[in-house]
Amino acid sequence: MESIVLIGFMGAGKTTVSKKLAAALNTRVVDMDDVLVERIGQPISEYFEEHGEASFREHETNLLKEALNEDSIIATGGGVILQPENQKVLSDKLVVYLKAHANILVQRIREDKVNIRPLAIKNDDGDLKRLFFSREKLYEKLAKITVDTSGKSPQEIVAEIIQQVAS
Image (cartoon, rainbow, N blue to C red; front, top):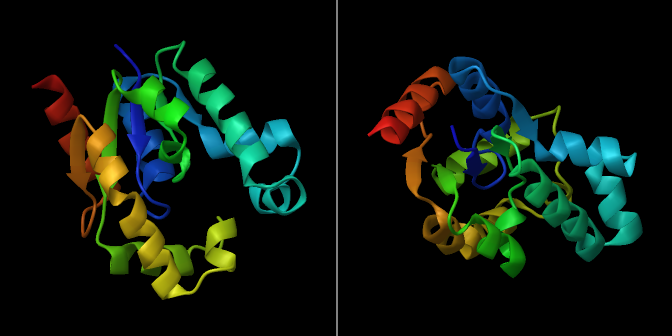
């Protein structure tokens, strides 16, 4: 099995779906945000403030390349698609875009008290929607498979991914 890379905006369900998909396919999961927090030794929001986004994106690119060396389900950060190098790396991979409507994404981001996202702290709802729309074409361009997560349970999303990967 080749790696399955989940991309999408924050709040799309990458972390939740990756765990359930890995369990269903009996493979390992790499949640890039979790691994990066472990490696950089602090929350991503703090790292962003202290070292800047460029430094963080460099760590992210290195981890993406490393994670793709082993078969796994990879949950990326929402901004992984911004780096041209990452776009190139992902161009021939099995990339699944977890898509949701902008209003649903913002609602999920605001309701999530566990994952505090740096970009959600300093942006209002309108800014988050604009950020989503600015990235949407890149997500769509890189995706081999697109799954709309709006109004679906994680189990339904996993079943849809497995069905599409198999066909």
